[in-house]
Image (tube, rainbow, N blue to C red; front, side, top):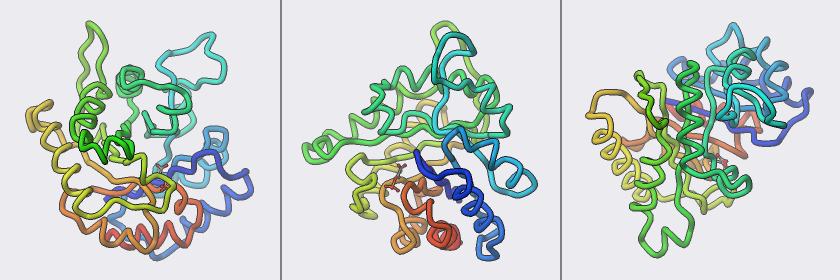
Length: 250
Ligand code: PEP
C-alpha cells in the first residue's frame, strides 16, 4: 500500500525535521507500507540525509518539462534525482487550476520525468460540477489518456510501478468531504480498465485515492479492493495522523 504525504507549501526546516524524525522513529508503521513524502522542493536537501537509510521515499511536487535553461523558478527531473528523490507528483489539481497546467503539459512532464528515471504520480480528478452533471467518467478518461507520458515522435518504455495514478476529486481536496466508498470503487475500477486497455494489461500501475483522507476515514478507504494506497495532504503534516493512516494500511 502506498501512503504518500503531499506537504504542499507547508513547513520550515525545523518543522520538517521534527515531522520526518517522528515518522522515522515510529514503531507503528507496518513494514509493508510504502511511505512517500513530498515536501516543498527547498526542503528536499534537508530531509534526504534523514531518510536515506530508511524505507521512506522522497519526491518533489512538480518538475519542469525542460532539461535546463532560462526557466526561472522551475526545477528539472535531473535536479530532483540529484537531490535524492525517486518520485514526482504531476498534474495536481492545484497546479492545474492555479498554474493553468494542462493535461498535455502533464503528459510532457511525465515523459521527461520517466525518461530520466523518476517514478511519477499523475493526479486526475473531476470538479463538483462534473460530478453533479454526471460527466465525470468521460472527463476522467480524457484527463487520464492525455496526461500519460507521450511525446510527439518518441516512444517511452514504462516499467511496473513507474506510473501511479492518484484519483483526487477536486471537491474532496482540503474540503473535509471525502468521496464515498462507492464513488471511489466506481472510479478506481474505471481507471484500471482504461489503463488495461492503454497498456494491454502488461504493466502494474497502482491507483491511489486522495481527498480529505485522515486518521479516521483511512481504514475503510484502504480496505477497498480497487485502492492501492492514498495521497494525503493536510493529515500528512501531523505525524500522529500520518502514522495512524499508515498503520491502517495493514
Ligand atoms: C492533496 O492535496 O493531494 C490532498 C489530497 O489534500 P487533502 O488530503 O488535504 O484533501
